[in-house]
Amino acid sequence: MPLHLYCVVRSDHPVRRRLDGVGDPPGPIDIVRSGELGVAASPVPEAAELTNADAVRHFDVLVDMLSDGPILPLRFGTTAPDAAAVINEVLQPAAVLYTKQLDALDGLVELRVTVVGRELDELAAVAAEHPEFRGRSADVGELDERIALGEAIGAELTRRRQERSELIIERMRPHCVSIQDQSNDDPITSRVAALVQMDQLSRVDSAATQLFNDLGAGYECEYIGPIPAADFVDIAPPRGHTDGAWGWTADDEPAGNWGWQH
Amino acid sequence: VTASAAPVLRAPRPSSLADVLEVILDKGIVIDAYIRVSVVGIELLTIDARIVIASVDTYLRFAEAVNRIDLNPRDQVAGLPGMVRGMTEGGAKSKTKGALNGVKETASELVDYVRGDDDSDDGGRRLERGRSDEPERRAPNGRRPPVGRGVRD
Image (cartoon, rainbow over all chains, first blue to last red; front, side, top):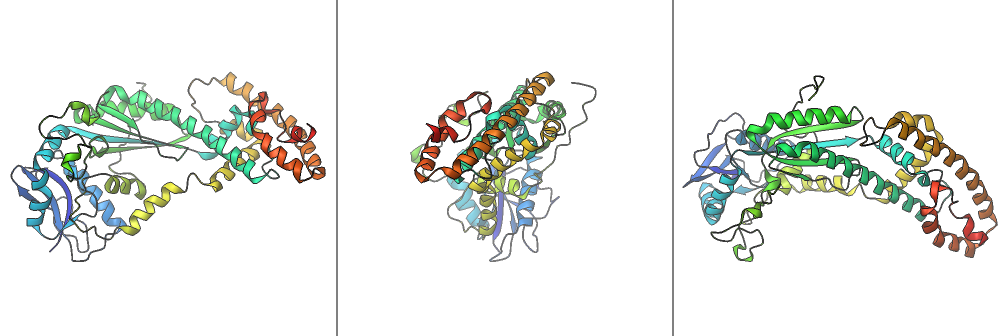
């Protein structure tokens, strides 16, 4: 039976079975071990199609396993024909690398803050700050003028969003190992990811509480974690060891490769 | 830390499926040798969610919304977000007042523009469009009519 793969772990990582695996019917999660490493996996039917519910389950399994120690997530949808393939093709080609990455992530988790503004409020604020945007002929103007106006407004929304991201980062940074703005092109949504030591969680919680209070009811705040610190480790595929693109060449890798500088 | 601070509830996972998918699809080890199970439909969903933002439709919506906000200046004040860094209440009020004046002026100028536009030929229009951006954006208080001067010059 094929195996759905969740994450690389240390071989002594506990198997709690608090959650079943993905698929219908769901199978029990086990660890396929080789030396110091293992891969969390559960059996899935042949030719299984993964659903949205499976995506959520996969995520939950990662978070659950993270509570017992460091994990390196495998991309959702990775399957192996059998346990031997897991050992030969996943673990053995990159065993040294995975061991180092697990050590580096030990005790660290990721937290995410998402702050979403109300579009109308944000537009009103932009209009108040920029008289030149107002009263322009949105109904009668040429199409390209209206688009240009909208673009200029979008740029202002983005600037406001960046200020909010900076505020979030400023408030949380003192308690984090690393923190980065991960906002995409949504101009009213700030996304920040923080790498945090487990024993600092309560401090970050306090900072987040204060931040959300200060932002007020006009912003919808989501605070997620702990999740695997995937944003802070370059978990590249183990192909192309020679190109050095991911900085894990042989024995010596400077700490800076992790990008954890404050 | 103030006494009023309520405890923050950390959620174990994002409320939106797109955010869950971003974590498990964009990140993590990729093993080339393996079959990817059919997650194609799911991947498209995340991509869709990202493209929508920077579209012409969005820009037109912004432009129209800001235009509409002008017509309801009171809503505009009430709608200002509670916390903007460094903005005092007095500052916000004076800005709003300026905004109201700006509306009136621009509106009357708009009437001129529309009238003038009816008379102008195609050549004039092209000229207007080409010249509209630069001086207008830099003019203080947005008093510059969108295109009128292009014709008169």
